[in-house]
Length: 526
Image 1 (spheres, rainbow, N blue to C red):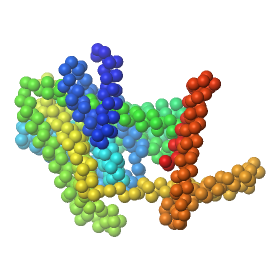
Image 2 (spheres, rainbow, N blue to C red):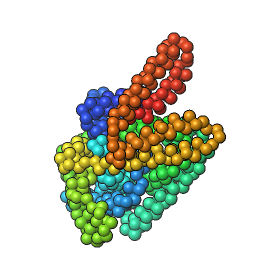
Image 3 (cartoon, rainbow, N blue to C red):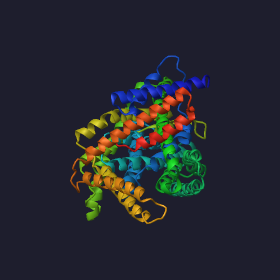
Image 4 (cartoon, rainbow, N blue to C red):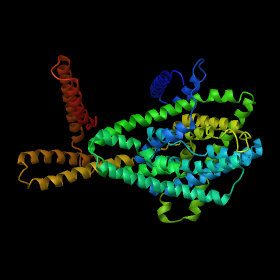
């Protein structure tokens, strides 16, 4: 590709500008990036930037899945494993079947190609909906269900996709073989993910270098994904399992300094990967329309919009019928206590946004079968997939915040309560340890006294925040103290900058000391 450095620079500039615009207008950045890419695709003279399927499935997907799984709430996912599994497996299968029937009966698409289309449009995007839900403060259980579904359903859809493409290309299909392949690829992917997580954990325990540890963490998703794919197993489940395993074991395998460094690196990396993907999605419309220019483009767009309506409709029907089936079968008190009303279910149903995985799978469909004939209705599959992404990601994504507010779905305050529990428990543990240290010969009485006063103050403040004791102005005093610390840290930064500018200290020294001040400031709540 000519002028690749200009293309990369232009892409990064577009990501920065569109990301800033998204923040300015208050719209989730995935939507603005897709629309921005769509507009840029029609700019005259702009070189074509094709979304290579191997780039998405082999380069972008592993770290994104790993990062999402690493920070996933494992206990919450276990509590809702039935809901997540039903959506990630059952809903994907039902969506694929209904879309296939519609494509076959209404558009005359052969069964194998029809199921390929159904598999392509079935999985939801692992980022867009959860980003919107978190930004609006949706209940954590709702976010967990949406996130858990999107992490797993890629594996289900890609197995159906491979079986359907193989049937379309080779002309043979066996239901028993497809079922066995699904079980084998899923179980094998989980096994590879656990093995990779264990090996990486053992390696990181023996490393005492934050830079090297961060590098290993960046490669972790690939270490699980690529071997699984080479063995014909589920790379998606391997990367997700590896992320969950290491996310749970992280306090034991990573140092404090490496966690600080890695968190910052991952935050930037995940944003860049997702941002570039969403821009690339938008850029695909113009070349897609050019490729099908010989056909009736309006007819194909209309059929694609109908597929999008079917995809959204199936999810809505599933979300408002399957819970009642489960309630009829499982009447245990523990399950009855976890039931939710129609409003949260409506939000979850509307959060089924599609993204880059669907488009990558559509573009990866072979051009020809084994007999040399063109792959049936490939143009329809690719264009319909893009229309589904446009309708769900942009249409539903833009209206999801309004729907959450309109239905009155608000945060449950679980994270705030748990954070307070953790802070109080940590303060209590500190005071107990100080009681033990006070008896040691190497500790000084005045030092122990100062530290005990600090943690007793914290414990009393957290108890007041929880309502267990009277406030007596402790929060106001804490805010004033933190404001004072903030200004003192600012004065230290200014002095370090003056010394650097005058040549008294090197720039490297200034940055090292500045980082210590930054870490100290990050502990403040103001």
